[in-house]
Length: 114
Image 1 (cartoon, rainbow, N blue to C red):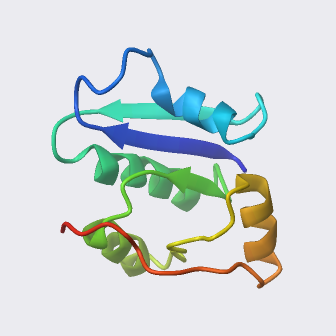
Image 2: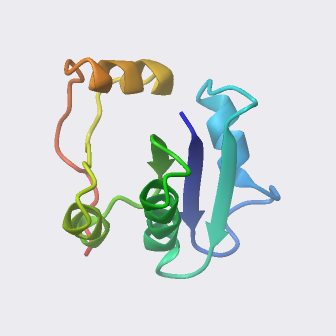
């Protein structure tokens, strides 16, 4: 896992970097960078744009990005980036390994907005 980008609407957290805390709570190592985008309506897509830029610039291979609504998925796919939704695995590192080995169990995207 190269990095994590998460976003949310303003005022949802008292932490300076909720992405870092979420990443550590998920069991990813301290060496994994985490960035947080805070803004009304658009933080998820902005987080995903940051992830896409890193991948397209060859600065990262595997990134977890927040806000996987339909528009974000469409933008990733338009740029040839594989999008995995509804991963059933709760351990992020195991989810990546399962995906790389072609055995990751997935389901529907639970996001219901565009």
